[in-house]
Image 1 (cartoon, rainbow, N blue to C red):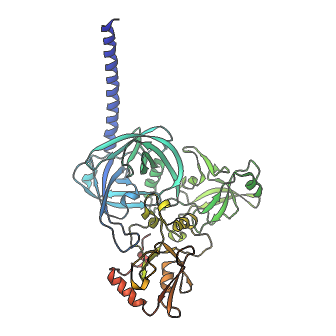
Image 2: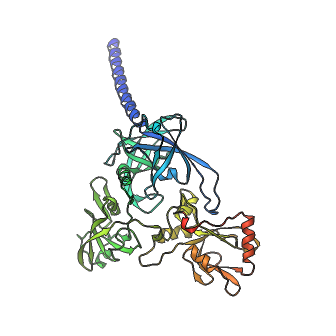
Image 3: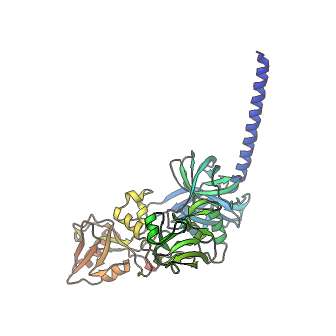
Length: 499
């Protein structure tokens, strides 16, 4: 064997591999050079209110994350990053100095926010990143972020699938990417790129699985913010059911080739709430035919649930085709966002005071998704079961019903006036002094005067106690004593209560 020849071949292979590695590293460094000029680090100081005692602020906390430099002199990040923010600091290139940033727009339903920095020096040397107009549907991408030590980190990830689902703050269905990566400690607006363009913004992670808002939604949000009046994205205004069972299709007199799903319930607001009727077969929304399982063939995302189409347009209306009473009809559905009064259980409660009442040591407030999320990311498993079920089944108000919110006992402040009532946290109030309770104001009004010398608060069936009785003669003194002992301030003006 000619060992010198083998040695020369090995040397050529090594040099070739080194050259290839150097070229790849140069490409990676070039890409990093572009990305680290378009991503900045955030430090947010915040003081959330305590879920059970909403007049108390929890201890000051801070978190660190990232934001994307976008055109128009703004920074794009997640709403989760800036909720309840007292101070937002931004740093470029991982180095001193820190600049103060201000909120321009926050949309919790999208989990997106835009920031501005007034100091012109901050923008020197930064380069806006392009937001890809097409989603990354498969393959690998780069994750970039700034760490608190000023280090710029990159790793790769791989797309698992795309789906239409709601963000953790609301009920609006949006295209979401699920992916995997070995990068640790994710979930604070890390930036996903492919060929130097942004393809996603990470919103959460679970071990090595991540979830991200995709770039077409990011681009839509930035474009919508530039309009004179930000209208946001629209909600679905109805509940629907699949028509993929033969007997169910026969019940609605549908032949095998008829597309569509059945409209089961109309909400008080949202897209289609004024135009659709229960029992309608919704066959087409926008340009998309809906199959019996509620799926559409999207040209960019592939097979997705049809509510995604509601926000394919920024027009005031979206065309639809329905079958009603055996006849096909063309409709124009008004694209509408759900307002607070359309919810029985509002979604988020940030950046403003929470309305509350304290009566006989019972801390009373209106139930929100934010309250349930105080039990952590797995709140569906750990929060009180009856409240989780209420949110799952009746979060949005039905059309034609009066506005109402769910009133709960979030805590009991121990006092002689409530002996025996201490284990009532998260109980649902239904009536007070014989009057129905559909809001905190209803409760206040009902408790102005006792009936036959007593105040009686009734709770939802299935709880340990059904009735809480307080003596009318001593309740004013008990309320004064409790307020003084537990330092309970007067509740906020309900008109300023957080939304």
